[in-house]
Image (cartoon, rainbow, N blue to C red; front, side):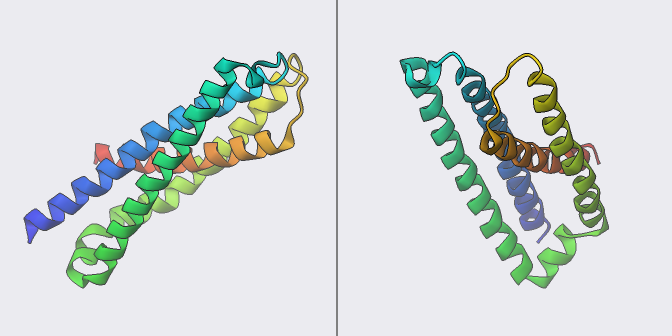
Length: 150
C-alpha cells in the first residue's frame, strides 16, 4: 500500500509540476499578445505564432487539470488513500495557498496599473484574464514548492 501512496503522491506532484510549467508559458504568451496589440503585431505572423502557442498551452493546461482531477477523484474514493494523501499538511498548505493567490492576482493588477502609464492599451478582458491566471498559478505554485520542501 505504501508504494501506491508514494506513486500517487509522485503522480499528483508531477501533474502539478507540468501544470505550472505550461501555465508559466501561457502567462508569458498572454502578456506578449497584450503588448503586441499596440504595434499591430497580433495580426502579423509572429502574433499568429504567439496565438497558436497560447492555444496549445491552454489545451495542455486543461489536460493537466483533468488528469489531476481524475487522480483526486480516485484518491477520495479510497478512505485509506484519502487519509494518507489529504493529511494535515496538505490541508494547511491548501489553505495557505489562497494568500498566494490573492497576492498573485493583486500583483498582476498592479503590474497592469504600472505599465499603463507608459503603454496606454486598456483591454479589460486581457487584464482580468491575466489577473485570474496569475492568481491560479500563484496558488498552485505555493502549494507545489511548500509541499516539495516538506
